[in-house]
Length: 490
Image 1: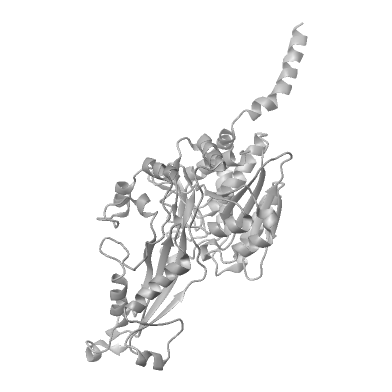
Image 2 (image 1 turned 90 degrees about the vertical axis):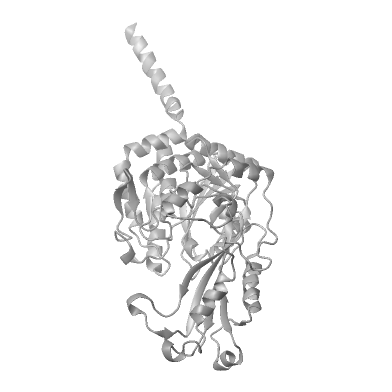
């Protein structure tokens, strides 16, 4: 009798084992998997981060693409490179699920910002784990922006497989290699492969979570446009003693021109700069009202004695267009400074856009403003005749690799499903209508005929785009859980 009971119990255990195993939620499966493989995961992530990925190094961008192609294929994913002459390849992978009703596309990018190694505490492509304020962080270019998202997606796949959790939707991956250059070829590549890249929703896994540390789901991104302005003085540098007060100084001219574009509170004074802004919906206003207000903490963290915006909170100001000076250049400073009136001064302007702005119109508003300040405008290096025929000459070059802002309604059914999935992994979620950074969401939506929702995983203080970029390892583990929950969507 005892033997028969033992056999029956063993039979029940065998039959019910997989079912019991599958009852583990996807986030919990990911959490257990990451906890059991942490050292190996850090090693694998470091291997990925060690491949240089700046735009000026196309050979290593190709290495990154090949690395990811192998990573997908080794997991049984149908994968290929989507190519276009003159552009880094887009890495594409798909998992077709029998009986699936929906297709979910995961987007991220494997390229990174340029580096100046002398500014880094460690070489930017020699990843190192260091403790900061009692928590481990991994330092390397693209640790947070944006290789972490790709690695989290790959690891989440492994975790679901290890726990025998079957996918319920068709899954596609689109990982590009020129997002940091403005994605100038992305739309063309996607349009050429429209059947492959279409999905019910694109989950854009890029950017940082809210500064409070809470997981964030964002329904739009600012657009981005650039202008380079050069103003002119003498044909060559002149002695500042012999010619000062007589020869116009282009550095001073440019400083005065730029200063006239904003008031002391940061409000842009260029006519019509704020025209046409699309109002937030009721749901978006409610989400903004519920979002954490992190301004005081951020002022302390960034050593700021004041902020722009006449007292408005950061999240309010992100929903307005902005004008930023990315850089200024004229003559020399420090030990190389000379007593000279320089021949030119150059500024790079960054225009962040919100829904309702058109990037070409916004660029033109700046150009018209400069013209209104009595500058003769050219788009080429001016000739002697042009310089001597006009009191003030400005060369303005508009960057064509620009794009508009995009926002997905929070009320859509698929939006609610994404929120529910992320909440199952991270608990309370911060909902934002617009993120501060810019991603080419419009190109994605037009070419793939879809909508986009952004689910970032990086810590806000990851030194994104700067020296000593880093990622909290806990942010990586959290991100793996979040990606597992999203992969499990129907």
